[in-house]
Length: 164
Image 1 (cartoon, rainbow, N blue to C red):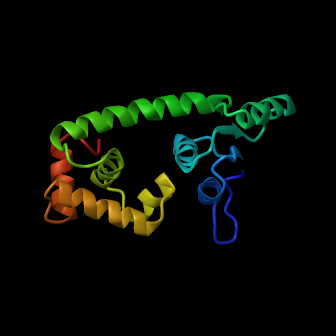
Image 2: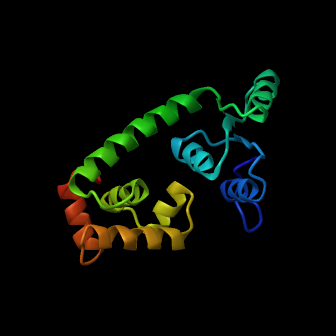
Image 3: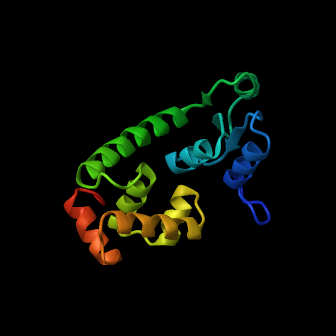
């Protein structure tokens, strides 16, 4: 699967749909994007592996075989990106969950980005979510932290150490 935009759809959403329709299908992403946001979005959608374009034929063939057998494959710097982001996300989630035990990990992740000053459209792009999904997650998070509005949520989140 390539993450490039297709007419009306991107690779992350295509992966999500393939996995929903055919759960036994294993997806390997091949993309020019090697940032952690792209990798994590693909994994959340159900991909089992991620290679950056430029991988050798040998690496690609091996990755296809491993993913087809149910393995997980991360090429080159992708593994370092994922590890770094997971560790960062884990710290953010722990930090946020101490102050706000109600929100889910996803809600805390979005709340962290709201507190960092990102608008919904930027959050949607970064997390490979639809604008509507981000609006819904923001609304749920605000309710769970008892924020009157987005500004109040930013203040509360920053007091809790989010948005740094």
